[in-house]
Length: 368
Image (cartoon, rainbow, N blue to C red):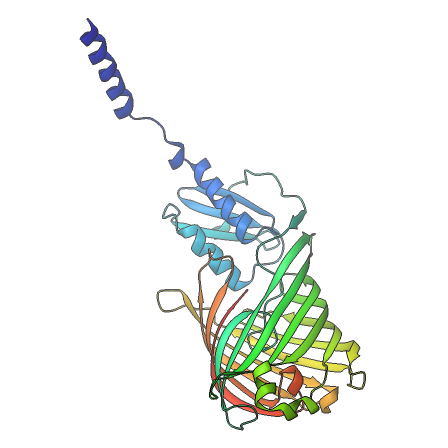
């Protein structure tokens, strides 16, 4: 009798496991939730409605169109499921066409958003600005030997968003920017640390219509000579200055799909030594190709940056960078760039701002 019950339980268990039953993991609700998690992560500030019909995912986004690169990355993430045959994005302010006639959205309207510690930043990092906080390592071959012919450059830094607010037409973001910028002479023995600049700032970024980017930034920078350089050349201490200052700066940029020109004006409100002139102007452009290549992960990028300072009679320093950008849409918006790096003009290393520099090199950069 005991064996009878055992075989009965075994038979019922087998029938339960093998019988067909509905799977939530293959339902539209499951994939709607999956798509919602991606849009909330990739474009949390947007008001997005989602619906699925015949394996086609429809997104209705209120307001102006997304940046072309943001839209591409969003499509790539959504298509990774292999469930959606295609992704159709509709912007509510545009007039519907027969091709984009959408089913009625099934989700309620998204309210205004306040988000602490959001992912990414809304003001894009200039490609060619050597003093923008980012993680980078590079090699520079200097045509004129000031403190070395072969220079190793490095920076450790980040633009970190602390709080973000979105209303109908604007996005506001409070963030902190911090970085360390160093230069080392690797042609000497031992390797000589030439200079280190320490930078920290707080910035309020404002973006209108997803294209016009602005930042109001208050920052501190201090510059320090390397110990090895002082030991190697003690006379340099006679020329040393205790360079330290606080700057109020306004930055503005506008995105034309692949092209992003920008300008900034800064005023040094507190400075040591007090004799240095306070006014600075900067400008340039970034280019990021729309099309990808090399396994659909790589874009061509280029940028030019000009820095002019009243202390140097507004003589411009030109930085140009060009190369390739590797990107992964899931990797928290971080971009890995391999660049050719060229500079001509006054040095951007704090202690040596009056010296001329002319170099070409290579740079690997990681930034948002």
